Amino acid sequence: MSIATRVGLYPVVSVAALLGMAVSGCSNLTTVNGKDSSAFLPSMRVAWDLSSSSSPSASLSQPHGGRAVELFVAHGSGDATQNLGAGQDPIRFGGVTFNTPLSIREQFDFSLVALSFRWRKFFNNFGFELLGGGGYGSLDATLDAGPQRGRENPGRLHAQGAFGVIGNLTPSTSLQARGTIGLSSRFSFGRSEAVVVQAIGKNAAVRAGWAWWNWNDDVNSGSDIHFKLSGPTLGLDLQF
Image 1 (cartoon, rainbow, N blue to C red):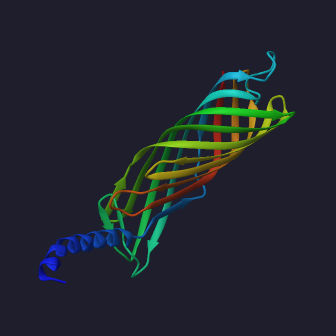
Image 2 (image 1 turned 180 degrees about the horizontal axis):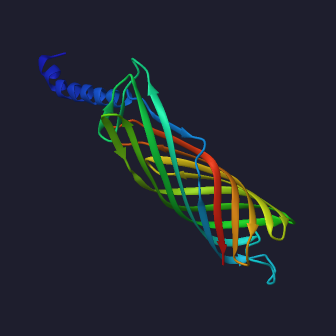
């Protein structure tokens, strides 16, 4: 190979080497992992029927087949501690690098607002539902290690889908379970719940049970984020 060829390739090789170092530097970070199994996870659903298979005299708060538009709002807060051992890769979060060994307190809030098209089908007292739509999810998290403190609060538009099953025990009481997945180019989440639903009027019902919620986020030039919440849930359903 001639000297000219070597000189011509040098800038390309140098750029490739720098990019490799940058990618390697970003990958040698510890993931932020936080889990809170005693969180309170409230939520609210508001649905408007587009078509319905229920009889005109039936209460709208009783789950029924048909198509609807559903607005879903949910929130959750958690608190956890992550320990970094000696020799472990650091965490970079909110522009702050947390070097090992270290104990880090993590506080994190999830918020979600979504609008979906909902389809339900019933076979006697058993039914299932499919939902598809999109929304906006936000995370507000703080890592605290004494003199070091970092905060990230990314918000993301996302697409989401859900599947659920419903069992009507009485005209006013049902058992319900639903799992939801949300995706965007930078984050993903999964939320599921198993609840007892009790009608409290023609257009309203309350939900009580247990919920699980995980959140994965890819923050620019920082550690990946993986938070999990689980705990009791209480919700209000409005149906029109």
